[in-house]
Amino acid sequence: MAKIEVNKLNLWYGDFHALINVSASFIEKKITAIIGPSGCGKSTLLRAFNRMNDLIEGVRTEGEIIIDTENILANGTDLVSLRKKVGMVFQRPNPFPLSIFENVIFGERVHGENLKRDNLERIAEESLRAVLLWDDLKDKLQKPALGLSLEQKQRLCIARLIAVKSDIVLMDEPCSTLDPQATARIEELMRELKDKYTIIIVTHNMQQAARVSDDTGFMLLGELVEFGRTDDVFTRPKDKRTEDYITGRYG
Amino acid sequence: MRKLKEFIIEKLVLISGLASIFFVILIFLFLLKEGLSLFKFVNPLQFLAGKSWYPISEPPQLGILPLILGSLVVTIGAAAISIPIGVACALYISEIAPGKIKETLKGGIELLAAIPSVVLGFIGMITIVPWIKHIFNLPTGLTALAGSVMLAFMAMPTIVSIAEDALYSVPRSYKEGALAMGATHWQTIWRVMLPAASSGILAAVMLGIGRVIGETMAVMMITGNAAVIPTTILQPVRTLTATVAAEMGEAVVGSEHYFALFAIGIVLFVISFAINVTADLFLHRETKKI
Image (cartoon, rainbow over all chains, first blue to last red; front, side, top):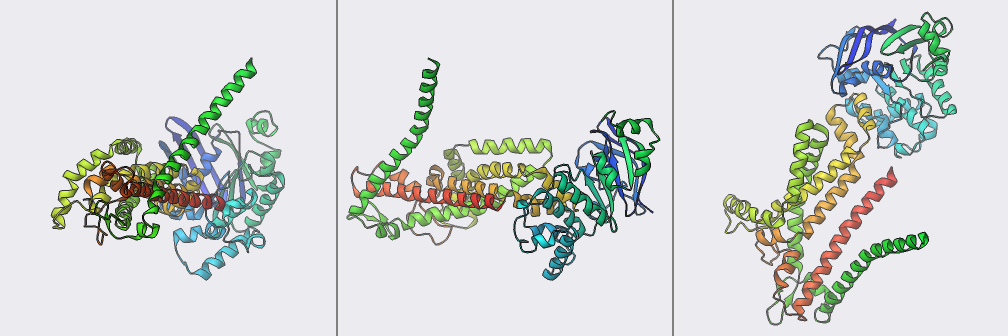
């Protein structure tokens, strides 16, 4: 079932046409990778799903992005609940300069549903267990999160999203600052998480896309050139440009 | 030849660097020598805790408790006014104000910093002082409150500009991360930006307070200069700085009064030093935490 349906999405930064007629469906509880050379618009597409592009001045969008039957580009979309549902993991791990515990329950604090101590502790434990940090960190929850290793920080940032029960996790090159072993472990985590979450990952790394994703989209100069099953895209690309890119002729 | 040139330049730079330290030490020694001489006549406890300051009565009474409390009251008042407004102003400039207003405000703050204190004192004298007299129905408006208000204006530029720098240097990724979690703008500011900038904001506050304690001219003009122990902020007070400035000219060199003024200088020095050390400790703790 399609979790996110993109219809004829166009986006401009001022005069620059950054996304051109993008249409695609992202399937629930699958990992979809978006690949393409730098500046092709893949991060822009990702940031359209939680409206983070709104932070940039002079951005204009046309078209539709339907998440669970709701067009999130419509005026009057509640950005707070949208961003709660659609979480984001950034390229550089960005835990807040707070304790590990406060980082995990940050969402609960800002959405403020049940702030009782035992509830917060339960959420922290569940979320840290889900990203396999609990055993390492359970005795250091009050320590500052900025003292963690890069990989732990990135896991913590994922735990933060699990804590607010996001449905969709957007990952913007989540492993680009990590070493190969840490990358492998984060990929393992992604596979585990996809039972419960719809994951969309933007990556520079084609091997990573081939390893973890079910579907793959290839973007070039703002267009979604090809979109389909990862196996098909990598072995039988329909478009000549895709073939050139994945065989390393440019990019 | 080239080596010689290098050598000379290196030593010249070294001497310039040492000169500043040398002068500080000289000033400090001079201050100590003159100030400590007082304690041949008066014991230190009597000096610090003595309740009356009558330096030209016979024998002179040199208790500076009223002066210390005067400085304290004015400073606390100024801090209570300038810290909330200053930090809020910094937040507005760095986070909320749109481009044009931001530039205008920053320029305005810089201008505020450029106003000489005597001008602030003068303005205070003809505006705030009569207002306070009128509003609170007092015999005189020359009060600690008037001093606090004017000094708040002096502390504010320091607090605003340094706190604004601190907020500006909070990594953008924190802000994006918080917004992407669905936090509102205000939650992002309150829960992420302020804690992240806390050490810088604290430094801003400390430097602002440091400026207030050391300020002389404005307080001398508008606090009334009565060396009595203050019980409310609506009462004339006399600060440590104003005392030194007002009396140094008339004190007989080598008299107890003269030495007492230097001893006040030592007290001021110790207070400023304590503030700086506290600020440093806080800053240090913050960096260690991170």
